[in-house]
Length: 388
Image 1 (cartoon, rainbow, N blue to C red):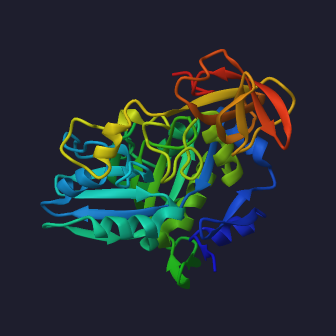
Image 2 (tube, one colour):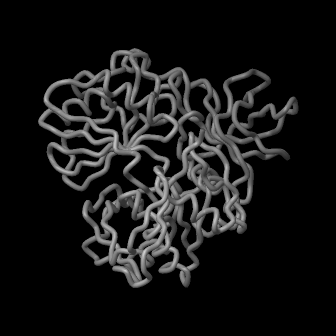
Image 3 (cartoon, rainbow, N blue to C red):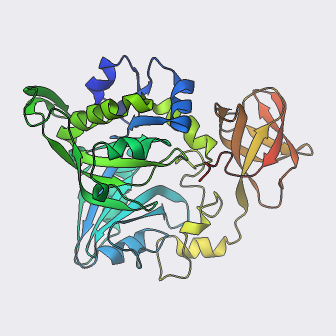
């Protein structure tokens, strides 16, 4: 049975179309539609419920040592308030998941995992940690929302003091205060939905959050983590503050088209336990020079990798989805991993895993879509890159 995020009732109240995803009931789109939500994020701002993501804490003297053993990136030189991305691999070098690691302080870290992989990740981590440290899965206690788009900073500034808003990309503020208009009982008790049911709670004057300058849309923006019981207050406050700036709630549909347009890999598509991070273009997060880590030996023997991730622009009529076979000069060279119509770019694009020696920039390829071969061109990744 699917779970509900703390914001489930808020989505229903706004007539969102709810679908099961990664064990949760989540909004795939609102009445505005996927294209409008996508363009809002590119041109103004959008707000996403990403409370289905998992959160795990590592604390203690051996926390860093264990993180460096579990993951391919190196967390040794991180500073307090920094975020770092990393794949986590099995012994064969395949990707178990890709994660974000937040350094709170020298012996305290927050690890954010993909919702569909939460239990698998937790079980893998527990089986491969040791020493003087404590690991705790706090996912059910935490809600997360993503405020994304060029107006995100303007909107957040209405509710936060400057010191609560991180300035650097992939940095965060731990105990950031977000003002809640009409808070501290101004509107009386309200019903707050949690995973355990409903409870009466007075609207607070502010909500304490982790605010990070991160996102999964290719735009400037923030991800905010708070206590699950504060999620409705935070959600409503952000939507109210951003209304005049064009902020709208957005669903899973726009989240996927945005990340694909920005060529951001998605677990289960561009990577899985049979695909290495080197194959899918994540070599920047694989530090083969650091001490031994899970999957290192396998990755060293596969360097350079036998496959690579490429970008395709469909030049023929049709949209390539995942697992369509890709051909060059009549020969199969790989398969697509994700594909859709990209609303902002106004065309159909796809990513694919192909043989390393094949498919150079500008090459003409064909993609088999339901038995019909459609022309495509190899183009540079990412398809979309925001102007700075």
